[in-house]
Image 1 (tube, rainbow, N blue to C red):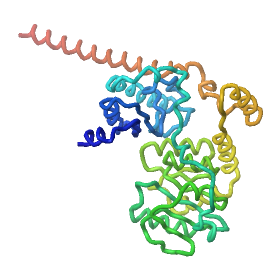
Image 2 (image 1 turned 120 degrees about the vertical axis):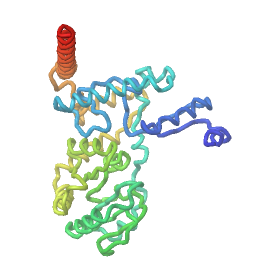
Image 3 (image 1 turned 135 degrees about the vertical axis):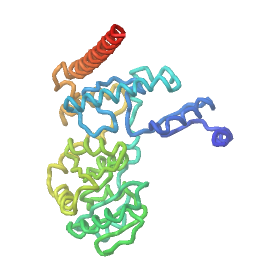
Image 4 (image 1 turned 180 degrees about the vertical axis):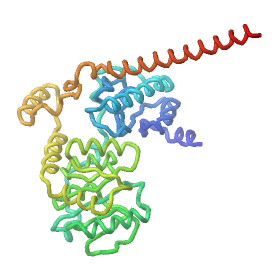
Length: 351
């Protein structure tokens, strides 16, 4: 039924959510014979044949940074290996995807929602001259459990800022807290009075905060949010806490710290300048990078693979560990078989 409706629409382009749970819809584009574009929060290099190393490039759902411990690299490698095997189950994709020169076509779609502030939202401008905290857990989480909601009410009473909270619930204190089922998040983050963004660390919201240089307090819930929160913490764009276990004083303290400590504002402001930079034709690109490196330096472009020992970069310790485990398992299996054979012949000799 859905496919028939899509055929009647006669699309010129098929745009789909390229997440692992919804990638099945790609078959519609193949069936209709139309070009397609996928939007996703992660690059998944195995599926796009982009150069990577499991030693420094974490899988999107793993809450680790680029500098991983042995256990983290082992886990990361096993997940990547399973993705490599699952790649054979999908339809083949056309040649341009395998051409590394096309890698620049892989763009962060979250940046498309970022834009400069056209006009100041009245919900901020008229009431929050002393600073405002924006709180949002995305489109899918408008109703939180009662214990979490009560925790937030107490947090909002403790912090010295007014709050705009995306929620279906009525505000217990309309002078300090404004609750709305929807608000123009990009415009609110762009407002100069916005001090902190309390977020579940969804990809789009996080890139909007980056674009407008608003430090964050991350309270991730699931999916890629755990990785996004850890990446944010490592880069000093904010602080991250566990939404379930963090108490009122911890969340309130995190908001006040992120709002007042210059380390977070300075880090995300510098990153915001980098994120906003655009350049054009190849002739201008060389000049851009010369000026860019002179102005911002090039340390942020260095792969973490350049900072770890060679044996870690080539996963020699991980492969050695897996090899040793395989040898041990084989030895145990042979020992068990040997005992079984001995017992069998001994019983046969007695008979």
